Amino acid sequence: MIDDTVRYATDRAVLCWLATVSEHGTPNVSPKELWRVHDHATVLIADIASGGSVRNLRINPACCVSFVDVFRQKGFKLTGAALVIGRKDDDFEHVSAPLRAVAGNRFPVRNVIAVTVEHVAPILAPSYALHNASEEEMMADAFKAYSVKPIAVGTGTGFPLYGNDGERRGNGGPQGSF
Ligand SMILES: Cc1cc2nc3c(=O)[nH]c(=O)nc-3n(C[C@H](O)[C@H](O)[C@H](O)COP(=O)(O)O)c2cc1C
Image (cartoon, rainbow, N blue to C red; front, side, top):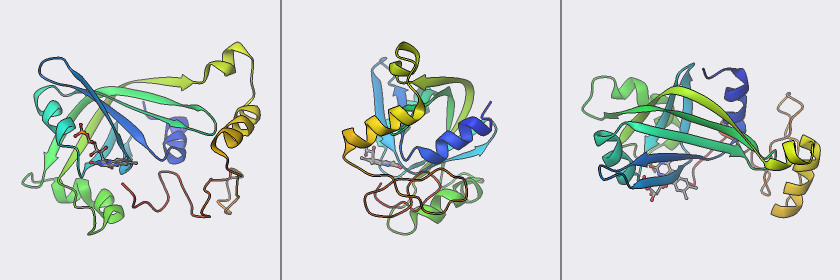
């Protein structure tokens, strides 16, 4: 389900977007920066300030987590169902540990949104199919659009991670702006 390709993409997407539905069928979507792939079928998202998403999920667990690498202009949609794990739940300490390790004291994790992924679909900028664009071309266009230059920070992967500030970005890097 969440194979190496998807996992690799999550490492390169700083943000994900969590879509939920209210009890009246009203859609809701909001960004989350503090999220992790837990295992081959589970994504964990920290509820720091996401009362709306949590409220929706407690009534209707159906949700979609989407993310793109804004430079490669590709990503994935993960659809499934979420369980909200609160501080009073037995497994909160264990499940929230990797999220709390990143969040630190400045961003208290109120709940963990544990998404069991049932379906994975790719997201691709149309130019890949319509104009047979290469990843390099798409990245060059994106660098221009965002007025940034790539920097290599010695990840050993051969793939630079990007940032104007020299900081490592991506889901595996230091975070804190939430
Ligand atoms: C860049 C960015 C990253 C964010 N990351 C998180 C996050 O990891 N967890 C969280 O609970 N809120 C995060 N937020 C805040 C929520 O997106 C924001 O409070 C939103 O209004 C919540 O909407 P909801 O209550 O409908 O989920 C982030 C916001 C931004 C702009």
